[in-house]
Length: 393
Image (cartoon, rainbow, N blue to C red; front, side, top):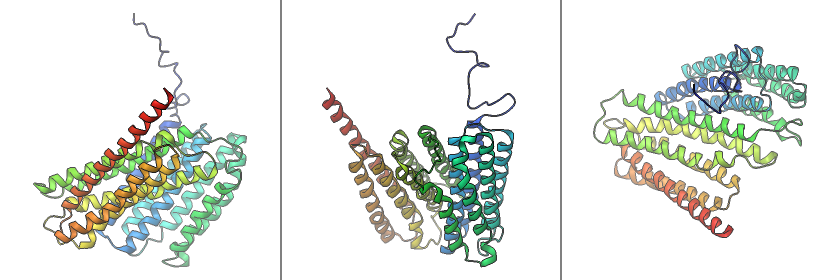
């Protein structure tokens, strides 16, 4: 007979399996995150085929509102871990709407589909309904949910009405709605007496970052299958994977281990810094796919910006996250990230000067730069850690 100190599986508490016959909170969160894989793939793929400034602005706006909805839902899951079938149904409805609005936003890039605004507004109303369900089941959540429900309804109305006002009204109404959704977080008591679970918050943002990085792998690999890969194209593909791996390393070597700083401002800044980070990672996916198959194509010299600018965005976001951590090595590591960010335009200019329509060499050069950044930042962290050990002994 096997002897084990662990409790039987059927008696072990689990946050993956909830009540009998129902999935638990973690299972619901992971399932919820899956829909963003589909959403990001659809949006980034549509831009890859129609890379114009107007389309870029449109898709960034769509992604930003979707991301905000994800953040507000994740905060609700953080503060209220009790979930019932009504809450699960609302989450499922939100997932369906996100898929529909992503497809709609991607299908009609030039005309800016009139369905996207109303679908975004309806999704925000579902988040409001989730807040109401949470308050009904847990009275302690009332202070957190009451003001947010009112603000979210106003924001939903603004965003939903944007197509009626005009084709480009989203440029004004969506950012206004974005700010209205964030407004309750700026109060003196933003959580309504609740306490945020920092460990869970860090896990949620870390998981979403992995999803963004995974989308880059998927997009680059799928793009590579459309063409005959050989020689420098294969090396470029590997270089793009190295870039993604380096981003993963730089993020998870510090941000999740430290998490957001204490206080209202620290938490908000830490969370919102992930928006440009995630947007930039999606941009890297588009640029990496373009660079992998640039050989033999008429690629404008400006196409190099599709890879270099998003990578700069990633590093700038890393600088902010590093400084927010407030560790002994933070300023020095942030300096390394900033130096790498400055080197990216130099590498881009040199590559374009040599061959304006060859992006594969740029991806290889940027991969080498990112590896150097990883090595440099790790060296600083190790050195500071050893000095701290020596001081304690």
